[in-house]
Amino acid sequence: MLDGVLYRRSFQATDAPDHVRRCHSCLRQASIFHQPLHKMVSMLCPIPFYQWGVNIVGDLQRTAGSKRYDIVAVDYFTKWVEPKPLPKYRSHDKLRVLSTTNDQVEVMNRVIIKGVKKRLQQDRGDWDQELPTVLWSFRKTRNMITGETPFILVYRSDALLPVEIHVNTARLKYHDELDNE
Image 1 (cartoon, helix red, strand yellow):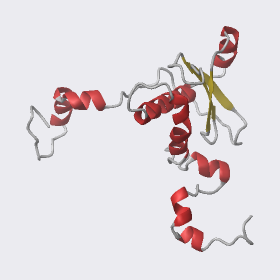
Image 2 (image 1 turned 45 degrees about the vertical axis):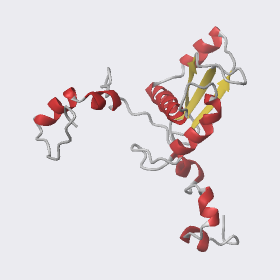
Image 3 (image 1 turned 180 degrees about the vertical axis):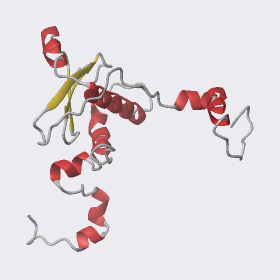
């Protein structure tokens, strides 16, 4: 939509950037792309749960359980995320935690915060109650780097959705409990 008019033509490569600059909703909803400041270095971690990145997110809105901070741990191999809401933390704990962080944990912090904001329609203080839902959706989303979901990398099987229990899917139809490992 441009100046209140919906266009049904495809933009040429030269027109598209100009259109996006003029489209207010495009600017407000688009993600910000960042280039790394330094050359990216591959981290070799071939064993699940061997190496974790840890960071603290806070000072968040106080929850009913007086939680204001969220400590987030990310496994480097599987991209499995484990958050833990906390009521407080001490400054010397912060220094110890920050020494183990990297950009992967920062990205996960943004993913969690963005997911919680999408789940909360208004400014309520129950963000800690939304963490399991946000994590479930992340754990079921295929990672571009690994090509698999974190759930598959951890459990070697795709997650069984609650709706699949009541619907006779092929997965349940061919399941044999005796041959199950």
